[in-house]
Image 1 (cartoon, rainbow, N blue to C red):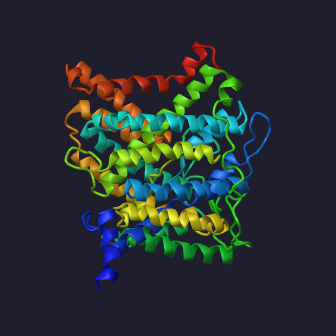
Image 2 (cartoon, one colour):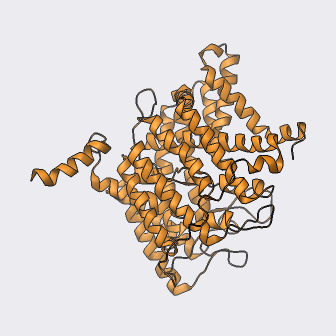
Image 3 (tube, rainbow, N blue to C red):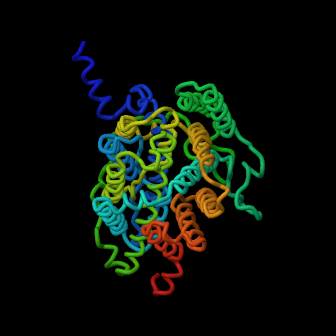
Length: 478
């Protein structure tokens, strides 16, 4: 009896499963939910960087990018689980990959562009090893951390609504976004989303364990049935009511060996010789600042949802978490998958019970399986998975109740943090707006000395970050 319990007890101690109020079953379920809500990256990343030509007209290719995307997510998420012991999954960062494809690779070759990503990852790793990144993280006031968590909640919900097609960019008109197609909800995929959201909401309200996973499963089954009967197909200009990211049907080919030929295909300093030292340095700076603070927001949001923040708003084992995340940026570039980063979709797994690194190990192992079953990843459409983001977004917005909104010097930075994230589709932009407004308001109220010096430094860096294009013009950088 003792021999059968020993492995379980060792697992519990290593991941602190009982200490964090969880169980192995909850971790398994949470890891699965996280995988399902972020598996789209294996399909989407190849479409973004695999089809974009570099300055020499060369393509990375959809198949090779799909392979390295799954590989990077698998290795780094398992590493986060084992080393960071935190319920956080990592994969290629959306936004960063688009920036790389459409703003960086157009000026140089893909190996040169990936080399700049590796360099950014190495720089940010040094910042972790010197504890600079940790000190900056802990220098952020508790009230701003709560605002970051709430802002991520709204950002998550917005991502879910956009990916499901509930919120769209209109073809014409004065409004930046519109409701559904032409101002109304139309199409079977929207119904799948609505059913998934309703099932999850009811189950969460009734405190049913596995509510989010059950909702995703129900919506996926409905989606497969709808597609089999209606043959709806993917969304496009001629089919606005189609499936947004992937069509829920069994592919002709289910399994196969992954193409990992892109691993190691990077040139560390090639970009500097191609476009010049200053221009390449500005790209590295932009990548670093976005990566640095996207991760800060993600870690705070996930920790807040998991109730892992201590009384001062600090995250347990923070240095190990940040070290793995920093290595992820370099690892993503070295594999030609673009910079890998912590995924806020991890909050969906946390919302379904995950509290420890064991959930990340499960998510990573599922990405290992995705290496050989890449076509099956598209079986779960965005419309079935994104209701989880809306539910978790709602749960994270509850952090607002702890923010002192009667103090305008807190209320405005909190508001800007929360509003700018979804409106600009960037966690880092929201954090930057909050930091800058916070230090300015504290200064005009005579509280400048109460602001941590590193917060002043970071705010100045954000001003530079926001003014990067005018600075390029000033220094004559293309």
